[in-house]
Length: 463
Image 1 (spheres, rainbow, N blue to C red):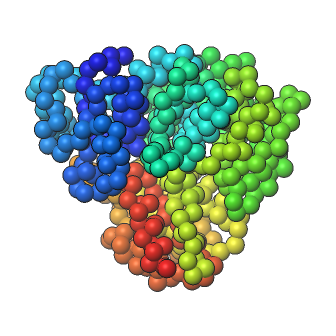
Image 2 (image 1 turned 120 degrees about the vertical axis):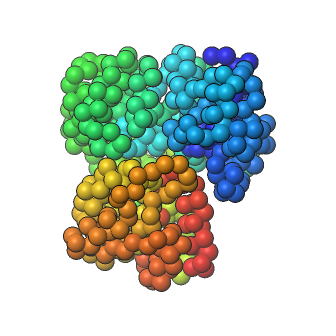
Image 3 (image 1 turned 90 degrees about the vertical axis):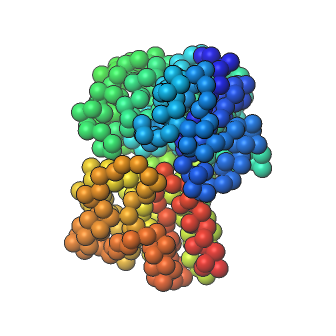
């Protein structure tokens, strides 16, 4: 990969773009970029952080793309009409997608560990990355979320880490089909369910991903990944919460508000694991990380000890704070599987849930309308309340035939409490009006950094 050329990131503030830009910058490449959020005055701290690391920022008006020597990286959200893209085409500068750029780095690594699946990718990537870092393996980590273990005063947006060992741990994405670009030594697939593509498309993408790997880490508790395990044969390390025939099997799961504990068994080895993150789904995520460690010949007791020091991922069931007996929680859940996992975890403990769910686009809302309705209908308690603003929209083209009112209507028809509002601010006012001691306010949604700020504002209002 040529690090002597200048790189320009169009959409540099995105969750997938920022860590990749930082990795290239730390490799010594010249990096600059633009972002719609910067032009709109949102999430200023993130852009200050980039400037402090020598990244030049420009308006998204084409003024930063000035040479055919530049390599212009674009995210999936960037459209051809964006002035930066038009400037690159006029100048003849190379245009590459974020995934293409990441795949070049990833495929060149000595030990490439690709973490895929519909749900849990960021958490498992963080778990594996932390485990290897804690044990002195010095990995490079590319994540789509901030990893709390690596956060410091100098690194508030720690979604990437540059290591020197040749081990590269990366979250890889199937939503745009870019998973096909990666050739992992170790392929981790947590689960497969309907999200951005049809199930037939997903089966092909994940099957091809696993076929490229020397070793596949696969979840026997998900029917789709279990089918991949049967096809992959002896190249697999499997894990399960229900099937003791798996390579790693967990039982004795004991939840607590601060986390949980469980026992893990593997070919005569045993370890007791203490996790600082809550939720039965995180036992599955932890098993994926421990299975990856096993594939790297790390003893189970050693990897379990490192995992007990994992502090979690930002915006994954993150407690923002409490006031007047009301707790505010911020969570990334945005598809039916993730939402169900979050609600199941929170219902392990008493207290009504007041939920704001902001959909991350009109397209996913239309594609999964019935699944969203069923998810909330089945996982809301009778006293819980769901409020929804319209999907997040920061520009570009979007077909808007299905909105939040369509989801809310279906949830109400199923006998649960749900309300739709035009704006997020109106949703916040409604949550504050409803909240009483013992309640938990839960902010859910993805691809919008201001949701975390909004959660903090609600807490401040309660105080």
